[in-house]
Length: 482
Image 1 (cartoon, helix red, strand yellow):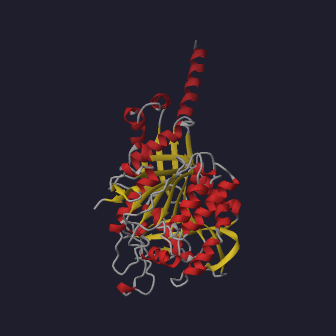
Image 2 (image 1 turned 90 degrees about the horizontal axis):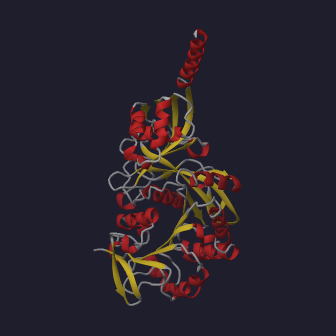
Image 3 (image 1 turned 180 degrees about the vertical axis):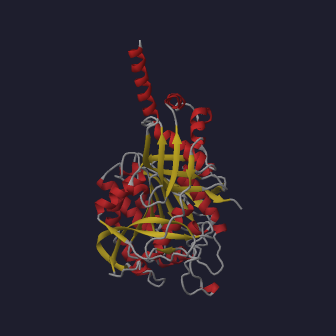
C-alpha cells in the first residue's frame, strides 16, 4: 500500500513538472482593420513565454487572443492573426512581448471552444486576459536615414525595372531613363510623414516655395536600394504574399513622365493608403521623367511589354490561391495590356490569379482597346476590370489630339462602355487648381475610397456607396455622386 502511494506520488510529481513546463518562442503577428475611423495595419514580431504543458497547435490560437487582449485591444478577435516566425515576414520588425500561463484543463477546454465563435470562448478569453504583454517599440529608421524624424512605418516596396542602373548609390538616382534588356529586381524602403493626409503624396511644391525635400513633411526613399536575384525576389514575395490569410500582392505600373524615385514613392503611398496587407511591387519602365519627352516615353512603353509579361508570370506563380491586384496609371496601361496579353498567349488561364485590374486614366486609344485588347485579354475567367476616366484629364486630352483618336481615359457622357470594363467617370471631382487632373486616382480621397472597396472587398459598382448609375450615349456607366 505504501509502495502504491509512492508510485502515485511520483506520477503526480511528473504531471506537476509537465504542467510547469516553460517555453519561449518567437512568432509573427499581424493586426488589421479597414473600418472607417479605426483603420489599422501592423506586422510585428512576438516574443512569447508560455508556462504550462506543451500546447501544440493551440499555442497560435491562445497567442492570437492574448495579442488582441493585451497588445491590440482596439481590434476584434478576427482582426488579429498569428503565424510561425519567418525572418522574411517579420524578422526586421520590432518585437512585442507576451507571457501566458495555462493548465492542462485550460487546454482541454480551449480545444473544445476552438470550434465556436469568438463570443463563445470564455476559457480562451480568461487565459488571454490573465497574461502580461508589452507593446513593440517604434520601428527604427533604415541605415543612413535621419534618426530624429518622427514618421509612420517605413514601407518595403519591391521593384522590377527595365531601367538601366546608373551606378549611383543613392536610391533616388539608382536607375535612370535609359532602357535595359534585362529586368532588375530589388526592394527599397519608402517612408510616409507623420502628418500624412490620406490620398496625398507629400512632396516639395513650388506654390509653397518649397525647393528641397523635407524629411519631416514629405514622402521619401531610404538612402539606398537593395538589389536581388530573381529567384530570391520571387521567394521573398511568395512568403509575404502567402502569409497569414494570403493577402496577395499589389502591382503598380506607373505612367508617363515618372522617374524611378517618383514611381517608388507613388507605390509606397498607394500601398499605405490602401492599407494593403501583402507586399507591393512596382514595375518601372524607362520613362524619361520629363514632361516634354512624351514621344520618347511612348516609344519606351511600346517596347517594355515582354519584360512586363515576365514579371506577371513571376507574380502569378507565387503560390496556390495567392491573388494578384494591379493598378496601372496613364501610359503604364499600354505596358500592362501588352504584357498581360503576352502572358495569356504563353499560359492560357494565367489570369485566374488576378483578382482586380484597375486601369487609371489609361492613355490607350479607345478604338485600339475595342478592336484589339478586348479580344486579346478575353478568357474564360477574367478578373474584374475597373476603368477610371475623366474629361478634366489634360494629358489624356493632349494625347487624344496628338493621335487624332479618343483615349480610353477620356471621361464624360461618352465615356467608353466596353465589356469587361466597369467604367467610372471621375470628371466632376478631378478639377485641380493649376493642376493637370491626371493623377486623381491617387490624390483624391473620393477616388481612393472607392478604390479601397475595389481592392479589399471586390465590390461591384452598384455596391459602392459613392457611385451613381448613369445611362450614357454609349451605354450604362457609373459616376461619382455629386
